[in-house]
Image (cartoon, rainbow, N blue to C red; front, top):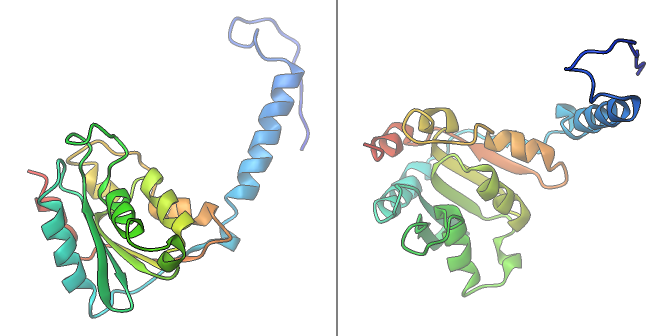
Length: 189
């Protein structure tokens, strides 16, 4: 990478110096390495026969929430935990449906038992929740409404779950989207 320094004196560039340009160049090289999609960890997964029935349980869970986000965790064909958004009731902005479901599971089980499990969530997870899903070692994540769809009804951080998973190259996860997505979106009236 070659850096070209121009010699001029304008108010826009007055704070730019060689050291800052080198820092920026380093960040861009780092970012291009981190987000190299040839080593992607997100694996697009087709919808399975059982997905709609588990998503219906997540939709029911969502109806209990401060915001209509719900999640269920399935392990070996059994629902082992559920959660819904309790951010307002608990005065905890991190109490999203996925996080609450994970905490519900962990209150009774070892964290290692989440490895390979599937989490069903009514909305595509935000970056915080997707990070937690990846760190917990879930093998699969299934969502209803996408971030793009949700952004038409409620504020969103416009980073997809696949983008987060692709940045976590050591932890592979299957992602299936759009399962009962219109029903999930209808909860936001």
